[in-house]
Length: 278
Ligand SMILES: NC(=O)c1ccc[n+]([C@@H]2O[C@H](COP(=O)([O-])OP(=O)(O)OC[C@H]3O[C@@H](n4cnc5c(N)ncnc54)[C@H](OP(=O)(O)O)[C@@H]3O)[C@@H](O)[C@H]2O)c1
Image 1 (cartoon, rainbow, N blue to C red):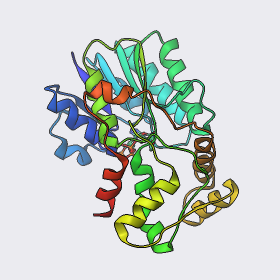
Image 2 (cartoon, rainbow, N blue to C red; image 1 turned 90 degrees about the vertical axis):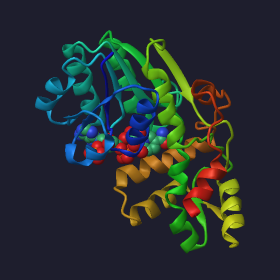
Image 3 (tube, rainbow, N blue to C red; image 1 turned 180 degrees about the horizontal axis):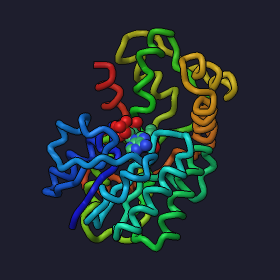
Image 4 (tube, helix red, strand yellow; image 1 turned 135 degrees about the vertical axis):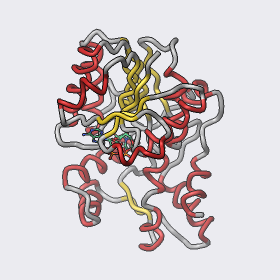
């Protein structure tokens, strides 16, 4: 089986590439910048979702493609569609796609591209494995430094719970499903345990010995603050919306499908927090 993975120089892609190799697989890294992939220890091919000419040559001979969703919101669906079309033309048999929790029903604005991408893969007649990733715990720990400096954690999720898992857990799920046996399966992936922003603030307070409260903000206020940190207005709005929907349970999941798939418990969110603060 010739296996290739996009986004291999990204944070999830690097972990997934290592996890695939640890299982004895030899993924081909499809990357925008081959120089960034020099340390991956894999065959590397140039591949840019937005540069159509790179797609067909890079997919030659590939039978299983891990498509890591783009982080570029400039026509993200168009980027994914180009890859799906090129994969079909190149004779790719199966696409594993990193989607989002309950992509078909979730109200998250963020999910629209994922839902459309899943549909495009199905419509192309390709065999699929949809890895519907829940929240990365790192989404929350990435901004802890700023929160500690400011003396408060902010968000718009109220008491909503995030069943988050570490990127490494989701990466392991890619590796666990890359071999045969997961044809046309949809996996709702999330952490075994969950936390609210108040839980996160309490844990940060405990670890730092400082009092860091959680301040729940109206979505517009939160989006405005994210913009003031340098996020584009559209993305700030999408993130604030994710919080609001999380407040209604959109990122909570008790299925434990992820831990069953990877054969171990997911990384406790507290461990990811401790790592970020170490
Ligand atoms: N579930 C969640 O909580 C959550 C959170 C954040 C992101 N995500 C999604 O999951 C994906 C992976 O997460 P991550 O943390 O690994 O993100 P990341 O570190 O930002 O990696 C994104 C990857 O996409 C690649 N990419 C972007 N535009 C491309 C293009 N035109 N052609 C080819 N490759 C392109 C990047 O290439 P370079 O290495 O060249 O930059 C990078 O490897 C993200 O892209 C996003 O869609 C999910």
